[in-house]
Every structure is written in structure tokens, then in C-alpha cells.
Image 1 (tube, rainbow, N blue to C red):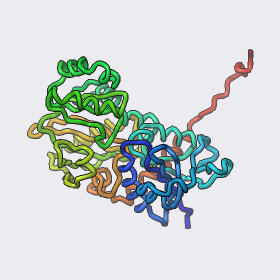
Image 2: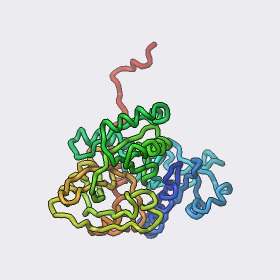
Image 3: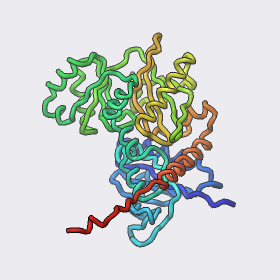
Image 4: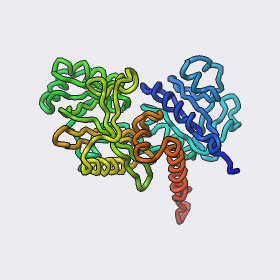
Amino acid sequence: MPQKLRVGVIFGGRSGEHEVSLVSATSIIQALDPSKYEVVPIGITREGRWLSSPQMLHLMKEQSGLNGTDEQYLLPEPGRRGLMSVEDKAQVVRELDVVFPIVHGTYGEDGTLQGLLELAGIPYVGAGVLGSALGMDKIVQKQLFREAGLPIVKYLWVLSEEVRERPQAVVAKIGRSLRYPVFTKPANTGSSVGISKIHSRAELRQGLELAAAFDRKVIIEQGVVNAREIECSVLGNNTPKASVPGEIVPSNEFYDYDAKYVDGKSKAIIPADLPRAIVRKLQATAIRAFTTLDLAGMARVDFFVVRRTNKIYLNEVNTLPGFTSISMYPKLWEASGMGYHELLDRLIALAIERHAEKAELRTVYDPKSAWYKEG
């Protein structure tokens, strides 16, 4: 029989989306075919400690027994390609063939973890360093979308320092540029953490302060009145494909953290009831957004579609979307003909393909003379 691939599934992390990551990892680990894969669970605590054991998910959820679990880490050295023991620094505890980094949010989805995996020389699922960083930063993301001619809402951004030191000036600046409702968001979070819908000037200060507590930059976006929230999944590397779009009907005024994960009352309509021409336009725009940010593997692309007119606005791209069996990303692919298990297989294959392609590139240049030895 062919040798099983050893898949490191990394979860948890120093992020406001720590709990979301645990739920995604649970579904992935349970769904990975044991005849094809040997799973190595790797948990990152809220404090940033790396731990690994077969019971890691349970320990992380219960927040108990963590102090008695072996600390392990990745060396930024391609010759090791595995977890090292803190106790015995010369020992590779578990070699890894590929990593599924399902650490949502900061220090996981923003390119930092991807950079470590690049240095370690281990194939990994999802976007690379640049794409992950761009996908996380809502401000730079929108600047690139605007440059590419993609349809986005009007927005402006400020430093969190400005919110704290010159709040009246920031409020006045927003009032001159945008009309209510607006959304205040930290530039680098996901799962709607730190986001507020603002209906009037009286609410603005509080929304800005909340967003500023989570990031050094705050983006303020023009709200789209009478809009439907539409999502589309993208899969692939150099030639990505888009799923059928789906519609989110949030239980709250907008699709906030509670509506996504807590109250269980939001609804997903898959596929979304949209004219065929609008579906094709959404899919084409999703792929353009994916390639504009130089993404790989997967991404969920979120849109607003105005009722009656079907005018499309590209909202944002999520490079590590929620990955439970009932999350929108896999559900959209299921409706497009690709089941959860097949989707995981494809993502792992894409990670290995991209790593092999990159390994063919030259990283050494031999100068004509040893000029660097002089002096």
C-alpha cells in the first residue's frame, strides 16, 4: 500500500478567532481519510505555546492539562521538515509531509505562520506569505481591488492612534466623506470581530474605539442599503475555479460574530436565487479578486448585491474561511459537486503542487567573481 501522508493540522493561535479555529480543526481532523493520511494535531495556545499530542484538540477546548503537554516547534530550516522537541533540541519528533494551517486571524492567517512554513520548507494549504497578508489587511486589499477596477464601496481609513488622540477630527472627516450607515472595522481581523454597524454620528465614536482596540488601523466603509450578502468559494492555484454563489440571511442586523457562530439562527441559501448572468459575473469577479491578491489553494469571496438592481460590490476576501462541514466554503463546493472529503484531498494536493513548483525555482546565483570576499 502507498505510504500515508503525514498531515500537520495547526489550530488555535493568538487571535480573537481562537475558538473558531478549534471548531474548524475538529471537522478537518475528523474528515481526513485515515487510509490516506496520518494526522498530527498541533495546537497553539492563546499565549503562543506550540503543543502536540493526540488529545490536543480536547485539551485546547477544555483549557486543561496543557502544562503537562510536550512543547514542540518548527525550525526555520528546510532540512528538518518536522516538529522539534523543546526537551531534546536535536530530535525531530514528527516529520511532516504537508501542513493544514487552520489558524484564523492574526498570527496565523496574516502571513506570519506561512512565513515560518516557507522557511521550514514544508508544503502547506492556502495562500502564501504575500497573499495571506493582503487577504488579511482590508485596507491594502481594497486599494489593490480599486487599482484592478473591481467594484468596491467607498471607504476611508485612519490610524488607531488618531482615534484615541483626535477623535473629533476623525468623526468630522468621516462625516465629510461618507453617509450613514457605515461600518467601522479593524483592518486585520476576521469573523466580524471588532466590527460595528453605525447608524448616526452619535454611535460613531464607540464603533471607532472598538475597532481601534483590535488593530493599529481602522477602516470605515460606506454601508450598502438594501443589500443581500452573497458568498462565493474559489479553489485552485494558477487556474482557480469558482463555486456556485450562496446567500447569507443573518439573524442580526448584519452578519456579526454572534450571528455567525453563537445564536444558530442565521440561514444559508445555496445556491443563491440570482439571475444566471449575475451568477457568472460574481464567479468571474471572485476569480479576479483571487488572482489580484496572488492567492493559492482556497479563498471565500464575499459580496453585497443590491436588491432589485443586482448591482454588485466586492466586500472582502477570506483566505482561511471557516471549515466546519456546515461552513459556507465547503457547503458551496458541495453544491457545486465536490464533497467535503474530496475538497480536503484537493486542497492538500494543491499545497504539494505549489511547493513542488516553487522548489524548481533557482535560489542561488553564482557571481562571475568572488567580489564579496574583498575588503
